[in-house]
Image 1 (tube, helix red, strand yellow):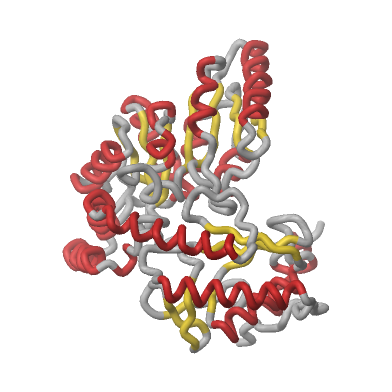
Image 2: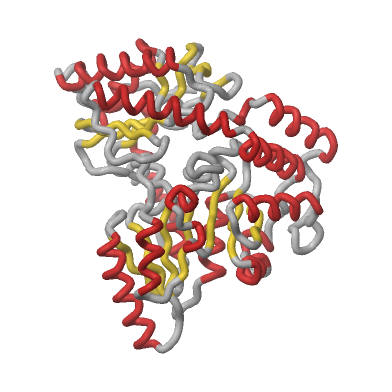
Length: 419
């Protein structure tokens, strides 16, 4: 019998194989100082484009005050226990009610984390006779939730409504054959890698041809899209067509936790059947208090969203004017597509950080096909035009070096922490 650890030691995985040269720099870097548009990295101040602090709430003075007072009043232990047993409070229920009203749904359920929350919600909603139809580029948390699905799942090409309809035909045929089960369509409000909005309105219109329910993960749309900030459904005028609306607090709210909103009876079902919440400690009260303040600011300070969009549009316009490919983004998420291998990408990142003081994240193989590089820039309300201009200049100069072959190296530069 083999030792299960032997395989893990022999094969570190597609990303883990680079650990010896990348840890602490290209992977698991440590940004230090107060969260903002500039932070410290390895002793140098950087302009940071890697934080989903969209509205700049992480260090907003009212947020910091609420977080501090919430911790001083309740401590991180309160309430003790899962909400079903001993961890429920009026403040938890207040936050749920306010979130539901904000996204125009009857009720909402709080979740401790977005990733495990949506995984567990899918598990609670879907049974072995049900069929899920989902977008090919759904987030890993959705894919992992579907891995637990006892029923069938059909994937459609990214944002391809015609293919979604084709998969719905397959799903409907299977349901009719089984004479059991229903159909759930899952997509995203904004796809976090490419920045394009899910085609929610067109998918919702397919309800005139097929009977299904629709779940939307709007992690990047909540707070950034729509007249009031209620997300991609509001932006597209189809919030009513979304049966279950999900978002995390880790993006616009700059916090911890998540929620799902929808019809009261369905949310009640989820509340009594979602294992990741029933068998886990309640969201600590300082986070609940802090999230109530964040939601208040999101609703009452539209200048935050306006400033975010001003910065995002300035950055995107500047990139396009300089000939960069930013794809089909129609959100604040700003991808920059380039050609090159993993080694070139890391050498370019090193140049950006060491010589231009620009910190941004790259996506390379195996997340995307070989030979491609995506820089994923996240503008926020706390960036300013000077930082945007410096970043545009740095990207222009490093792109010239990339095209000239300056970054062609045989292996990933060794920048790992050796301690």
